[in-house]
Image (cartoon, rainbow, N blue to C red):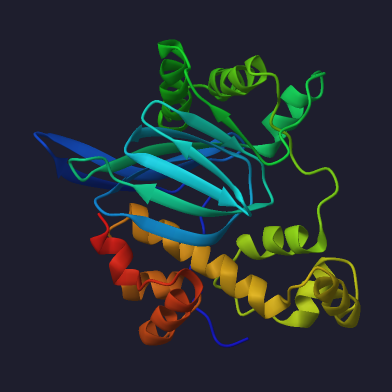
Length: 289
């Protein structure tokens, strides 16, 4: 599948970027804390449509400025400032991030580790979120809880047990609306494949190695993926482009460096694949902010 770079994703990753918005600086960052979760912050200055975006893991998104639109088939959910949405893993959406009148879109997202989601869901009687759940008209304490939860990931001196409780509090807010966030109990082969590839997206993956790691022959793997209307190449490319999208949105890394991190030695080939996947160039993502 081509030679790739050897960059690895560390258990804890931090990238900060500060933008001057009005008079106050706004920090964009993505952080991960092993065993607990991840959080990030996005700021954009123009409309951006992300087609067929795969949500691999459950996520909670809080819109702070502007508007987020989720489209799935004929269904459309519009979220404004102060609204939030809980999205189940393994879902696919067309996503539009639309700036407000003064030209700014701003949102924060939070992913809770699967082990914590399972721990919370074990004692729940509410139904699991099938696709997504819009959280509108939430009280001010909801955003305060959200901010405490994201701070628990960034505060390295905060004990894991206390950080976990803050993240579980966010799951409790979702349950307050009559549902709970759950991990996939019967993942598809595609879901299992993406979980495997995400551990090392820049690796020079061989089909035989992938099949072995998933406990099946290469022929069986290809047949089962075909039954799910996909392929090894399609999923590897999509996973790499999704990671690249995140890095473009929340870091200052040069496009060439990001290309290497997701497995492309040629920045031009990477740009071609990225445009084919999202309909815009990598530099357009950068100028969107």
